[in-house]
Length: 464
Image (cartoon, rainbow, N blue to C red):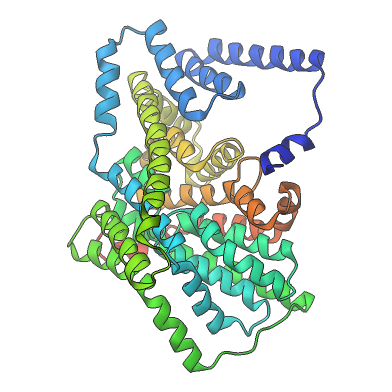
């Protein structure tokens, strides 16, 4: 039985009268919202109604736009078609399929295995050594990958069986990897950062570098919690590796780590843009996977290309419909109206950021990161700018919220991936992840109110 089916089986079936009552109640609320808020209410009531019926977010976005435009406006069909084309005719969007391709090559090409060996040789002798090695390996893989799910798959599929073999509880290892895997969208390259940059016209290079120090801080915080729990429970420690063994492990992993130098060095020196860095990452990942590590053969390349194309097509379809949704919001002046409403409430920066975090965390319960960013960034961004919040800091704040959303039900992708690897149920993993998820909430508060943590590095590198 799949994890999704297990989750559904936990929910008790609803009787027909009760379901009808819920449907009538929800319909009444949506109609009330539409009447009270006018066009703004109609747009979001339509979107929410479609999502509640189980329509995928991408299709719900497109149907909302088309329904509203054709029934309530005089916008010509040619304008919709033109916006569909011009909305994704952006050079920056090309970074998404390239980073997906690079992540797939790195996942299947032996890079993760060598990073784990290097991390284990350095800190495996400490309390919870294998768990700590898993966190460090996730951080190193996140530096070159850009995907949370890919990080969980690449590191978790290797480190979890090793931890169980050494006597660690399966829940302990799974909880670590679920949260540490979220580093995949915070460190240097990140697909959600590219999506945010496209939605708000923020520098992709600055966003990449801005996630480095917050990522290091979260890595340290997760390691401290892991070490404390392992020491308290008396978990096994591995023998301390010699410096010779550490050097061999480093030499074997250095080819993967060199990708960090290529991305940061290339963008900082101006040799290539962030999008071109994504293309270079894909080519380099292919080269080391096939010709250096040789964990992949040429016969495996078509499968990797096909998987990458499928995922890229899905994300680009979401982006296309979200572009239409943004066009609708701009046409109805919704972002400016929302900004005026927020500023009219005199919230202030502190209260506004609390409001943003609450909205994004709630959205994380029902949507995946790219959809959340494409819907809410254009709405919240104008108000943030008028309050004087730095766009790069705001992007990292949104990214940190997306990390939390990946680690809790019902839509936490990392949970489902870890469930497939560990064979634990979603309910078990929801409990197992709590110590590290609580740590991530603390980290979110730090990122929210310490903007220098995000913007200091890109500033001194001249990217802002």
